[in-house]
Length: 259
Image (cartoon, rainbow, N blue to C red):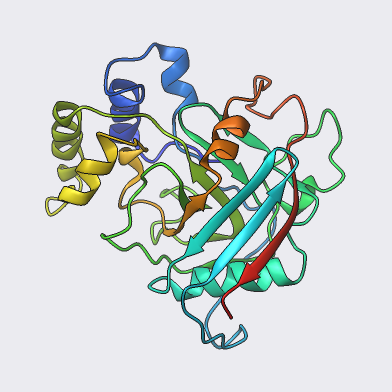
């Protein structure tokens, strides 16, 4: 399941603001288009009735990778995504998969079960558990550096913005200027007149950075609380023309705390 363009308008936004708030060249703009997921098989929505009723708060998950550890906090306000990530982690779904798509100054993407025991010439990104998750897009959660978000299919086939059942990405992103955020805000308001970056989001994007053009389009359901250096290391790994790392970057295990 691959991250693709949100829309023609957002493609322009990425080209204009994708690199530190300034203009980037065509190649860089193409790389920084966001990923949509491609589903290889028929999928159905997961609901709270189809999953174990998990009552929990302050849930943390430790993603152990071949490049280091990443600790994430899962949001209680996105319970469908939180509980699904917990369920998959507890069953070892992610163990042995790879970060199959990596773009420096943008994001790192994983969660494709077909990437276990990867082949050197394999093209991964279409696998999943066989279901999607209803969107839980909350305005208080945005794509700052370290945001944990769900990949999904594009709007043309997925207007409800349903999430992949397993694939996720962690934001690295860039630092933006206030002026570039104001311009981006106006661009996004053409599709959604009520869109507005919060003061918290503006502070984050102009200091630690992120990928603001994704806000309102994908479900953010957690954030990195330790291990941003590992995210940076993975994001900086050499890749081929399909953005797959030349060296397999393995998710060794995902363990959950806080239940």
